[in-house]
Amino acid sequence: KILSDDTIRVSATAVRVPVVGGHAESVNVSFEKSFELENVVRLLKETSGVIVLDNPRESIYPMPKNAHQKDEVFVGRIRRDESYANSLNLWIVADNLRKGAATNAIQIAEYLISKNLV
Figure 1 (tube, rainbow, N blue to C red):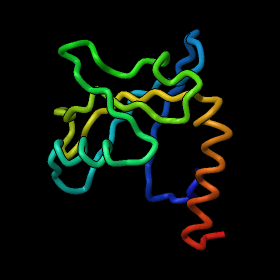
Figure 2: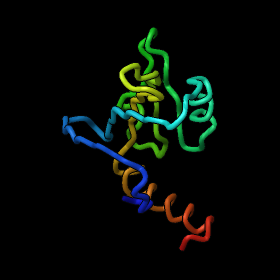
Figure 3: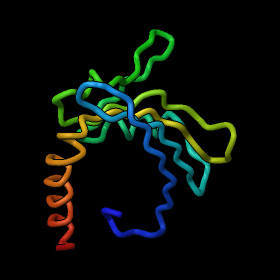
Figure 4: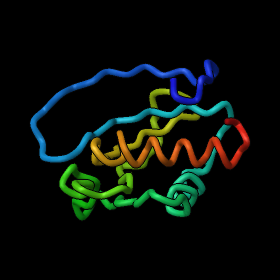
């Protein structure tokens, strides 16, 4: 909706549970072509505003408490989705009052201005 791009198909379900300061999302992404999981992880680590917490063997993955009162988005449980070709699953948490509202609005405006879209 934000980018007004109908080619990006989204199926979303909201589940509300009582946590302090954050939203959590289980995200499934499908690509047109095959991909290397290591490249996805590397790109996420290189992305400004994204922190990768991904070591399930040691119980290291994002939780809402990681995101509380922070502007960054935390991503983990990065893995292939074996149920659908060229897909992966991610677990993402962010402070919905900061990233989901105020900070996000500013960052989207900055991006649109930098691309001369507004």
